[in-house]
Length: 249
Image 1: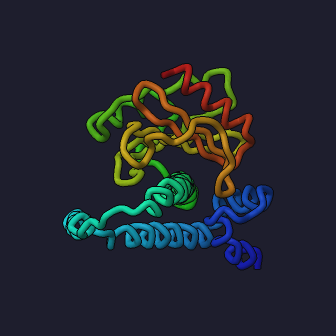
Image 2 (image 1 turned 180 degrees about the horizontal axis):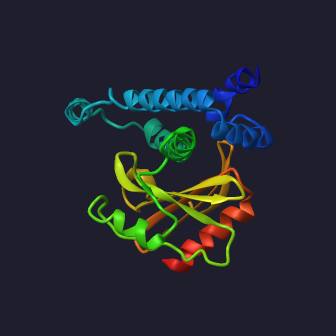
Image 3 (image 1 turned 45 degrees about the vertical axis):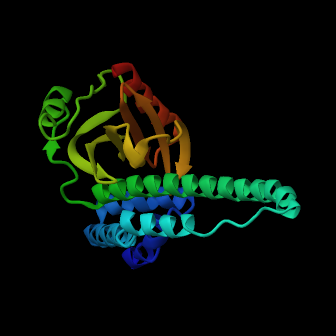
């Protein structure tokens, strides 16, 4: 069956390992197949649960402080000429390793954010109720968020464009509340996420377009907010919708 063929590719799709053409075709299939949509949604929820559980068992501040104190209490030894010569070389090595670890950690953090955004986008595609406020009128959708998220934002005028506003819902990225808006372009859904630009979730993330996890994405900061545009449309289409939001901001 066709559904069985697509279902076998869901994990690769959610992990961003499908070629662009197959990912786009699977996105279209999810909109028409309730069985695959339900399966995809269950896998997204499981994936997010595992990610949350993986952060649960981190070292507490008390344990970190205890270890730091134990290290600081080690008796000092007299420094020989050998160590005077060796310490700078060791310092260079440590600095290099620390830099590599920092770059690796930043890369992993970015990938985690992009993965969460892709999961939220796929979950919306797979859900029978992708939005909580269903309207093509920006003057209806924007006021709906008042009191539900701790910031305000502007929505662009779409007259004369190929984009259609579907609606929106409250979402969470790294436990921070934000707005998730859904637009349609030639039978494709595009997600726009708006959050406060602070905290580990968004701060210091690079701006600009990129391809991540089977989707084209664009991101930028404006007026204290961080915007993400995610979809399986072309990079030009992503940039076009991004520009509308930039101009409205």
